[in-house]
Amino acid sequence: MSNKPELLGYSTSETVNGGKLSPEIYFDGYKTPYPIKFAGLLLKTALSSAYDATATPTYPVAVPCGLGGRPVGFAYRTTRRTDQYGSQELFDDLDNYLPVVADRTGGSSEYAVSSAKFANASVRPLIPGQTIGVPVRAATNIIVGDEITSDASGFATVAVSGNVVVGLAESPANNAAGAAGAMFVRVKVGHLYTKA
Image (cartoon, rainbow, N blue to C red):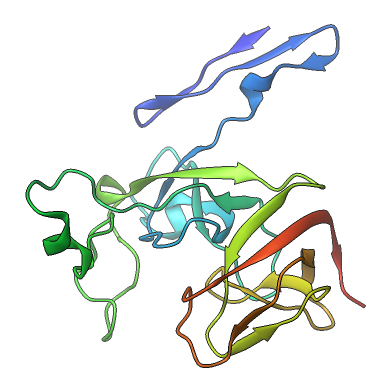
């Protein structure tokens, strides 16, 4: 059985042979209304209509996982623009991530409000036993063995009661004086559970 739905220019296929799912089901292409600046950011899915009411038919979009939420995966790469020409040094200091958002500091939204501007995001599943690098939340000190969860923007932080634990820290990451994403922590993914 093969199923190939077409959604906004991308497609996926699922094949079932003798009760065994083929690797084709590991489709990782989503649209995202948010600029993803860090590979490893913890992500969840939401409905496209939550960000653009005219985005019909409704489809899943990748968004940063909320505080202590249940992520579906992590950003495999950023949404950094790659269509610019000239010296890369000229673009390194600029905020060149897709989708382009008018203002992320004032009263306007931090995400694109038009589905026509949503960017492509590569989301990989969290597989128990794998080790991933997750960007660390600002003003956070993580020690080896800490239970890791997502903060409100998808960055790694230490889990507290009621948070969904993604895995255990396998490296220290003292980002107490750094900005969000200034360093990464190595996380051994486990079976997701809610911390008591």
